[in-house]
Length: 288
Image (cartoon, rainbow, N blue to C red; front, side):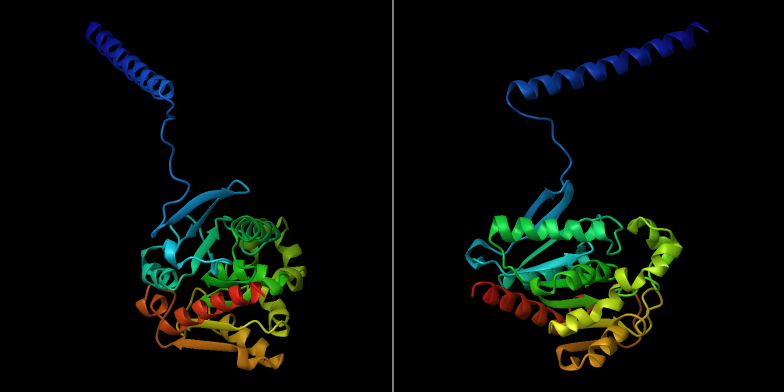
């Protein structure tokens, strides 16, 4: 019993010493004008800046200083959940930066294109355009669920969009994440969201983009079981055709590919060239 009591007393003494050491280290750091280190806002795969917008993690991947210009051409990327963009996309983003194109995004959580997520994208846009001299028209790039993010925002702000690129993007909430899973992000019940799909489902508002003559390029696997090609990218094309805007859209079908990390999705030169060209045109048109 005495051994057990002594062991507890020793453990308590060690814990007290650890707390005291941490307190002293913090006090010393503050005495020299230093604050204890904080975790990074966001870890980036390429040079850039991470910062907060509306208390949400945001970032910009930046071209070399000599390649930057005013207005700065840029791509609005989504989704920017923790860990995205990731190493699979590094080559693609390197091409953007080498062409003088910045890449920016804001983590809206699992927003699925909801009004709140669209407000946060608008806050990022305002930060970059009004405060940092970025082009007033950006190219949008949505990967997977990011298609919901960028397209929902684009249909509300077509005059701010120079083009839309997508890598197996989601456009129909019913296919992913499904009405039941998406409803809470919209502050609605599943039944309420179902009744308001014309208002909230991006695929139902594609005609706005076609009317505004927004160019689009998509790459999507024909074996995608998570985000089916037919109901998403192929349906997007059909909506453009119905609006007599077929010439503005290109769909690259990746044969035999699903919702995966196939290199061809992220090293698609046609998509890279499209996004660069649209971002550059957006900057030129912004400067007029």
